[in-house]
Length: 459
Image (cartoon, rainbow, N blue to C red):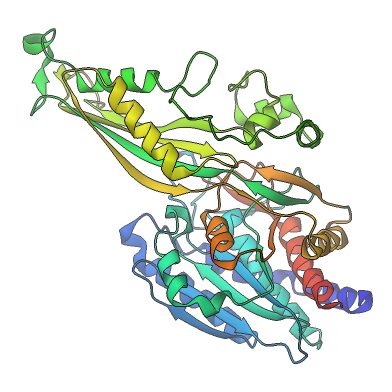
């Protein structure tokens, strides 16, 4: 087995330029799922991935949903073996703010061992590792040792709103022995990780309305409640001075990690000053009684993601705006449920809204947190695969972000193992300007996939 893996690794080293070229072509497509004008690029990205799978001998279809299409591929091994379902997403976040990018987000640039582009790390680069792994095994003249299913969606960045309905109608696409997802990061550069927990998400929009039109602040100031000031007042009631969320019932269901898990999280690689420098901040916020890594990985949070209202153009315009709005997100931890938190938040916002304005709370996205079993045979195999590719054993960690499809898979597939193997780095800048993916990690990701395929086939 080791000889076969080494043989394929040599092919990967020989094909570095070819695999990178294919990735760059995929990164050039602005497949922004949140932007309706990018629909043709979404479709182009789906077709490109399907073509890439077919070129490696896999069957593939681009299947429509009520939103963006899903790429569904399959490869049947000659020898009977286990089936792995590879999930990834080819849609990307909007690139805004464009002025903060050092290069065009959809014209990839190679610099200092990284590829810079929107979607480089999240998730086109990591997704493509598995396509390249299939290619490398074929090029080595070896039989692919496992059956493969590929499920690449185009709506992950907007909460996968149509995937549930799609999979309920096409449940056969989920038939597998384990799911593999690479849409996260290592614990630190060169320190591979297996993620066993993801935070959930509740995302809401708050709209505050007052007078039926904008008013002159000199004529009506003092007798009209200002919707923008009312919104700021509402937002100020969401957290206290110690950064604790003030929504009644918010913490009721939080599963508090035991001291063993807290100690394990605190032992992860972490340089406080280096992170502050990278972020451009002088102090960390959050709940002071918890270590920064616990705040980022183990604790629930609430953040204001956007706010609007009134005049923000050049010069002065003395108006009382007729309306204002904000978007807020809450990251949730095990035992919290996004629907309950969404309801509690709406009730609380209506309670603290000052008289004289009307408020509307609109749920936008949501997913429950997830914990996966780290003791399964498949997880231990994944750990061996990461060690072979990265040259050191992985650590086990939770991740602060959310991958909506993980909770969906847990629901639809029961106890089937879910392997969360992140090849990116914590400082890849995903969702922000100048997103990047380390090229060494890209090729180590391909090697991890190869090792995983062969090790999973061992009896």
